[in-house]
Image (cartoon, rainbow, N blue to C red; front, side, top):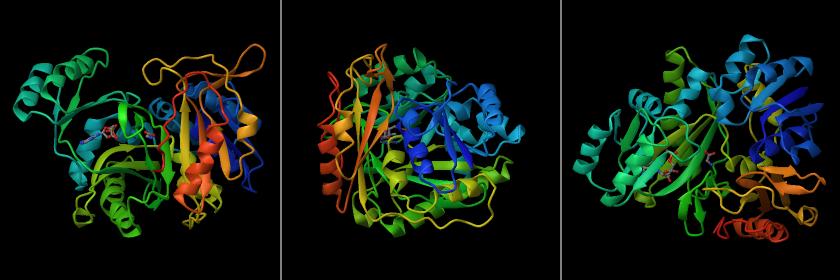
Length: 421
Ligand code: AMP
Ligand code: GLY
């Protein structure tokens, strides 16, 4: 089979890499890809959200199945177009991807289907939200309704921070709706479910590290690292999450006539005290895709055929696949450019990758990398590389990952040292 992977980050590199190892896959294509993906797949220079060009390329290259990585392509309606054009694709229709692209919609569905989540109210006017903030006081969480690459959420700990958050929400972020919700405490876990519109299959749970600096300090990012399987929840808790946080949403979406096919990612807040679990677990948000960097930690552990899973999700296979996982733990460390996330520097040399790939028990995935005029590898955006270590324990996995990370050079790079601790 010929598979087209849509996207060009480390998540898509991991998807392409895992698919390339499937004996039933004859060729992997990727649009737009990146220099790392180009070493294992045929890359096509098509922008992620250029849906028409993607469909033309899929037809021209006789693609049997496409897989979407990033939310931007989903929001642009790539799945709608491929389905209308008769090319099988894994991902939700635009109307189902609203679970991620509108926080207010996600809250409404959670309310209707009884999913445990933080209490909230939706505001369309600044004055009304100001009154609400003054009445509630801090801590309070304010979220812009639409997609904002992780920049639309303000966890306000002190009342004097409200004004700046409101300025950003109604200023540069141009939010026409803001969700104000209860502040929750605990640890975060990412549970991703593969869905075919009716049923869900849980992937191995992971957790990511959202803050820039060690000890969960600094600004929020797209994710600076991930661990899989996450030791933060048990098998029983995962089953509870599937029953309470995934199945009711699938049912609600199906009843609305917009069944959810694709990866449903539940971002969860899990209470630390065992006595408060599982009943105290709350959904913070849904994403309608694989997480980045979670995917880089999850997919290499999948030992059963990834194609069977994708075919089931796309409605090409009836029999529900049984996923098998390698027993190792994986730890993924992100190397980001100087200035990330505020103003990432581009064009700096990335060196030492050849040596890093020789470290046993590791895998290296490219994100925002490029080539300069001499063909040398350079940084091309915020998160540049994901380095994944595998081990019989989490400590071993992280030691291997950092052994490879330490062989890579990028001026002013930002990488956390505490992934997996
Ligand atoms: P979201 O995009 O909704 O997942 O929010 C981004 C991050 O903000 C989450 O990963 C949490 O770290 C934090 N966050 C979101 N909602 C809450 C909440 N209700 N209470 C505490 N922290 C939150
Ligand atoms: N790692 C969080 C995300 O993919 O949204």
